[in-house]
Length: 418
Image (tube, rainbow, N blue to C red; front, side):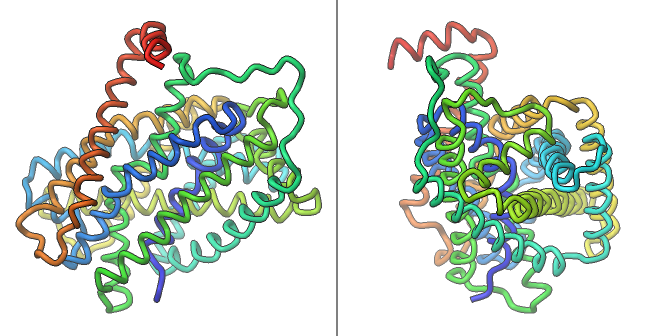
């Protein structure tokens, strides 16, 4: 059975959420936040599955379904995508730039590396289209999977690093801990609003291959990518917990230094001989995420504007124009956050979490519309899991705003009830 959109989805997920946030979770809090990773992956699952299911049911992407449910839904999606597309693209490019600088050892600033990466993504996507992206990310995904699994089991065999005397782990119930918890779940496995991409990629693959997969085939492809990314998130957390937690080493805000620290998680587990292999694999992983994000937002926003303004849908010009706009906007964001990797990543992931309830509700409404044939309607367990997911996302979004308004009061409230 051919794998396609599911691998692209996994490549999008296994980037900042894994290399940065999962690693930070393990390094700072040990395994305390493991349950948050598991819960976020389980309760967000329906909204991504709905997007994939919609294309199998209708043969078109879910953005067309948004329009059929009401123009206001598509406008709402467009409005929540506008701010996130620049911030999210900036965050993944920022990390990728650090890994590239660390790999090549050239004394260039993060913004210069970022400009080169974004420019390359625009050119590659403009020339290579979906087929290049699909082929590239399958190879990158295989290299990453082997590297992470090897490092994970090596870390388990070698055991946890010795803690420094007097080490006291930070509390998740402090204001900073609550905010990081929400940021961690914001991109675990990734932002809910980009669930449309799996639908767009599935539609494009069907056009390229001339074959529309059945629901069973599409579900296998999606589930493989989704749950592999979920398992790898736990692997990255384990590496952070085993190699860095309690050692007194703090992950850097500088993207290049951070890249070196992430690579050391692998080399300390596997051995120094693996440095160059891990460096290439780590950069390849983040580059695959960057190019997938530029492609995903380019497809989603260009299709959205085509539907809203009744533009010609066969032309690739809107896609290319939007990839350029997204890249320029992301570069400008990077110039603002240069030297502050954690702040940019947390900003991007929290933004994604805040808009997640809206994005999840839109997918829920569309997949249970009258347009969907009975045989494609999600089973009852998936419907109830989606409802639980909407409640979960909404509650934590409210908690985040309470933390902003009264950080100490919110922290004390949770300490009292727990």
